[in-house]
Length: 247
Image 1 (cartoon, one colour):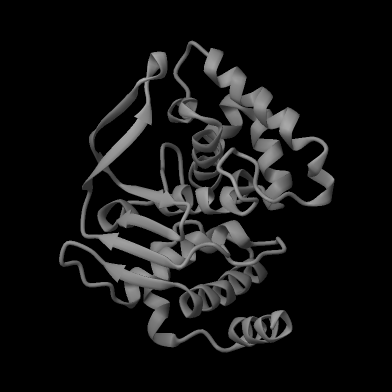
Image 2: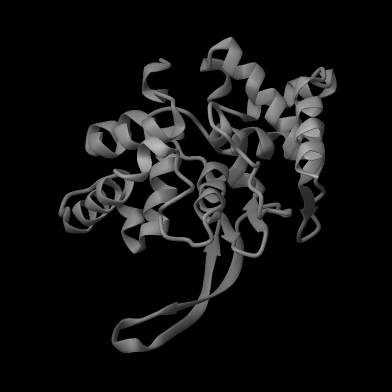
């Protein structure tokens, strides 16, 4: 079965990219700056993701090829240069037309449980679903101050591949001995940091810290490198990329 899956994915990666999808690649801000071989690798991954993942619209939103290619292309940035199983726990991507309201339950001080509602641009569920707001997806950029909600939510899926949301994805052998200490040292440093930092939203938990850091690595690598050079180097080893050097 695994051999058949590998054969099928290799076939999908190597077939010509549909020409009618080419205009939608403008929704992947990092793509024009990648080397040609990386661009070709990314286009192959897009075809695998679109063949294996289901896309659904919410609140009346119609999911078309532009939406599918844009989401898959930004998610595929996390797969470049790495052994990958294409987000194995993910089955469905749900897309709202705009920011949406969702209920939440979270731990509060003193052992209490806090419940409420909040406006969201995306979320990632352990049971195989990523939820996105299309207006936030379309606003993704590559440059100082830029953000990328697709990269953020798919970073959570990457984190889940070892079975837990804790900021430790499946690691290559070279990082297994160094990642936990280095990553959690950076997390505790952020929690103690009194000045503004683009990673501020990552103080909530190690899982959120990982997702925010990965988002910045691919959207605003200069900001991440300037404020957290050690973390930037660590992510560079994980993804085998140096986005800050592309411009």
